Length: 239
Image (tube, rainbow, N blue to C red; front, side):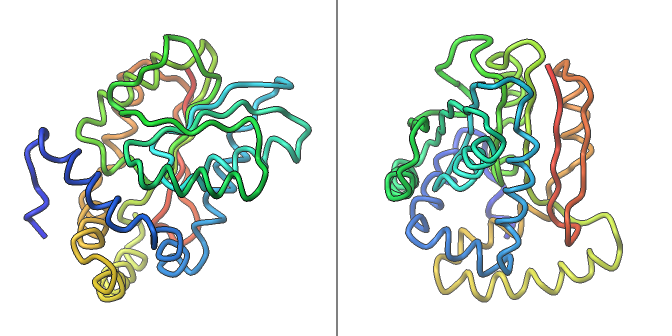
């Protein structure tokens, strides 16, 4: 899997192509490979994104097929809030699926836009919350992404991210080593390169570096919480 160690100028395009290739099967594969737990992870992040104000603006970065953006919408509605959500991604094929999904559910107040997470087109201090799910491992430059998040967040705004990395617990790490073989076997039936990258990026991602970069970029109250199974985590912080 070392073939995925690419130059920064090539990585974004490679990732875009990988996700575009699997866009039609992305949701199904997520649910199958996580045994449905990925839905619970997104719901937890969505609940964390709810603000005290009656209405607030949310940016969901690398929205993919829109599952987290939709979860954020429903979490707000259940609490009597109004979340004005912009969901952004650099894969047009993923965005098409996200738009269809939102339309089928008659969800309003949710916009899907094409955009680059490392060069966001939004003005400074535009959003109350920035969210993303399972994207951190795919960014060329995590520091640049966090700078952009800090820039577009309003003062006192927060970020809520969920992703996957190697578990901290030894038994859970051993389980993932075995489970990764199953992911590769099933994933190879869809797109072997995409799921090879998934396993490789999980194994290589450094959660401690993520925390340090968030603090370096002037976020406060940075917290990381491991979620069920140990492989998923949620990180939050405030501007």
